[in-house]
Length: 532
Image 1 (tube, rainbow, N blue to C red):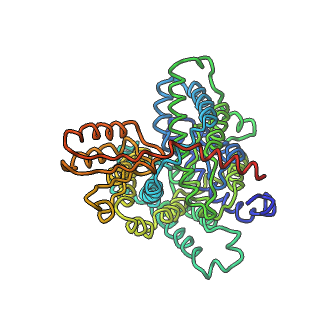
Image 2 (cartoon, helix red, strand yellow):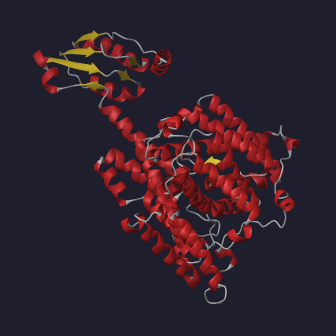
Image 3 (cartoon, rainbow, N blue to C red):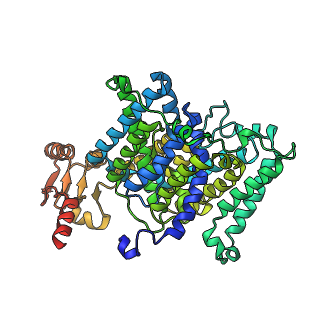
C-alpha cells in the first residue's frame, strides 16, 4: 500500500515515535557494549547507531528493520584493529566494506537471503530470544562483567553463558534486583487489557515508564550505600563538556595504506559477514512484520553499504541490520521506517545534549525490557507449532536454537542450515519420480514418471531404483513432463538402457516435451510493465 493511500508519510507518527524511543533506550547500551567488546572507542558505537538509524533508515526499503553495530562483528573488529595496528586504518577497511556491499547490491547478491529455510529463520528468532534472556539475567542481578549485546557462548570475561549465571550469585546487588523486579511488574501490568484501555498507555510505552522509574530509583538509592548502583551498573555514554568536544570524538580514516592487501582482506571479510547478518535479520524481520511486507534485498545491501562508508568516514563501527533492535521496534508498535530514523535522531540529540541524564539509566531497567523482548521471540507456542509441522521442520529449528545458544549466531544458523539441507536431500532421494503401485504395474509393466526438475541430487535414488529392476521385465521411463533434467541423470538412463540389452529388459523411454523455461521473474515484470 502506498504512502498516499496510507494518508501520508507521517500518518503512523503516533505509533512510530513511541516505538523509536523504546528502540533508542535499548540501542544505547548495545552500541556502547559492542564498542567495548570490539576494542574500539566507546563513541564509535554511538556513531554507528546514529548512522544506522538515520542514513540506512532513509535509504533502506525495510519498514521495520533497525541497523547499527552488531555483536556478531565484535570479534572480527577486535582482531582487525590489533592486526592493522590502529583504529584509523581499520576505519579504511570499514569504508572498503561499504563499497563492496554496494557492488554486491548491484550484482543482485541479496537473493541469497531467500534461500534460508523458514525453520532455520524461526529457530534463529527463538534462539536469540533465549540468548537475550540468559544474557540479561546477570545484568538484572547487578553482575555486569559481560558486555551488553553479547550473543556468544564463550565470553570475554572467561565465563560462558551458563557459568555466568553461577558467578552472579557471588555479586548480587540489592538495588539492581529491586529495580528489576519493579520494572518487570510495570511491564507485565502494561500488557494487561485494563491498562491498555487507558488512552495514555497508547502514547507512553511501558519501557519508557520503566526507564524513568529506574532513573528515579537510582537517584534515591544513591543516598543509601547498601542499595546504590556502581558505575558499571548504569549506562556509560562518553560525556563532552562542549559542542566542539562532542565533534572532537569523531575519528577519520587513515587512507595512507588504502591499497594494502591486508586492509582489503579485512574490508571484504566485514562486507561478507555484515551482508549475511543483514540478510538473515531482514528475512526474520519480514516474518515478524504484522503487515508481511517484503523488503527489497538488493536495495538493503546498497543501503548498508552507504551506511558503512559514512560510518567508516566519521569514526563508526561496521553496521548491519540487527534483530534485537528490529524486534524491539516491532513489539513496541513501530509501523514504518520513521521509527528507525527517529531512533537515530534521538540518539544523536541525546548524545549531544543530555549524556549525563542517559548515564543515570540502570542496566537492570534495560534488562527487564529485554526480558520481554526475548520472551516474545521465544514463546512456547512457537515450539509447539514447529513440532506439529513434523521432524523435517522441527529438527533444523531446534538445531539452530541449540547452535546459537552454545556457539554464536552465524555458526548456529549454519548448523541449522546443514540439517535442513540433509532433509531436503533425503526427500529428493525419495521423490525423483512418481510411482504408484496400482497404476504403474499394470500388465506387468513398471512405469517411472520423472518429476519436472530432476537434478544431480536425484542421481543416487534413480540409480538405486534402476539397479533393482529384475531381469526379463519391461520398464517405461516417462520423461514427458520434465522441464529440466541434469546431464548426470541422462547418462544414468542411457547407461541403464545399454545394460538392459544384456539383462533381457525391455526399455521404453518417453522423451520430454519441453526443455527448460524462460526466466519467469522477468516475464512477470514485463507483463506488469505492459499493463501499466
